[in-house]
Amino acid sequence: MYSNGHHGAGGDDNGRTDLFVPGRLCLFGEHSDWAAEHGLHNGYCLVIGTDQGLSAAAKTSDRFTVETLLPDAQGRPTGRTRQMSCPWQEDMLLESAKDQDEFFRYCAGVAHQVFSRVDGGLDLRITSMDLPLRKGVSSSAAVCILVAKAFDTIYQLGLFPHELMELAYRGEKLTGSQCGRMDQACIYGKTPVLLTFQKNMDIRVEPLFPAREIQMFFVDLAGHKDTVKILADLQGSYLRSAKLKEALGGENERLVRSAYRALTAGDAMRLGELMSEAQEMFDRLVAPNSPDQLASPLLHQVLSLGEITEHIHGGKGVGSQGDGTCQFVARSVEDRDAAMEKIHRSFPDMQCFPLTISSSASQGRKQLAHAR
Image 1: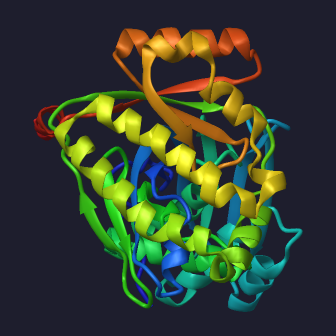
Image 2: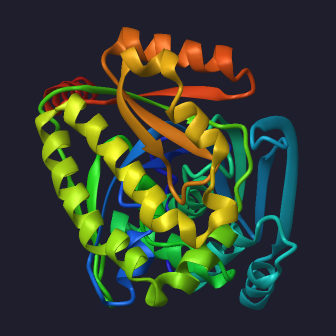
């Protein structure tokens, strides 16, 4: 057991600690994390945290309580809240994690993983969110990381990022989720990272430091996708489909290696071209294995919108793909703003979010300014 200590930076007079966890945008390499577990080929992906995320306040408690905002039908926050509260007991946490009707089962799963490390429970209130939910930007993983970070901060566990990622992953898997291991990389925030996955091995994480700033944006397609169905379809087809194994193995490695070089060089044009190439490969080799979910009519309407061609270098789907979210590399800040405006004009229900991949020099300046 760990004793309860000081609450650390961000705490207030009531013992609450403020926390923030961003979403995660998979630039390249979707589905290669779980595919690597079959041992046929290493998985590689490039990810970055979003500007948007979940803010919360946490404090110690003799129970496990989580309160969160509720999304509307499009996965956007409504201002309404929902809460669960159960005794700080291992069996109660496990029961909640296994209950498929429990809205907070992921949170309970992470708490169950932490149970033996702490001497009390947690009161966690999500106070604001601007992250699109159920759209492929890891809102579920962000919640799991949030719970893990809350326990780590409140009880001063001193856990490393990869340990927090492991707690969050195991907590979500406990619920029966088929999530892969890339989602929890949202813990690294706005630093782009290369993740390497190998069967029965820890994830290898390498940060990238782009030479030049790259302007991007992503779009909530205001559609519907069933990630559980997509994962079930693809995982069920993987060992039987040579094309799917090629897509998530050798082809994925080739694209990620090229994207790594482009991102490190700050080459926005090449990065955008590779995104378009990756989408073509996905549609050809992966999508046929889940035709209902990965036909993605909204995604393809936006990707092919002629009005934005002059403003972008390329784009692709996000996460498990489907009609959840798409992303684009813009030619400039002005082009990004123009493209977002044109998309919103053509598709009023869709919502656009800017994303700047900072250069290594600007990251250093921000860190220096923060230190001062």
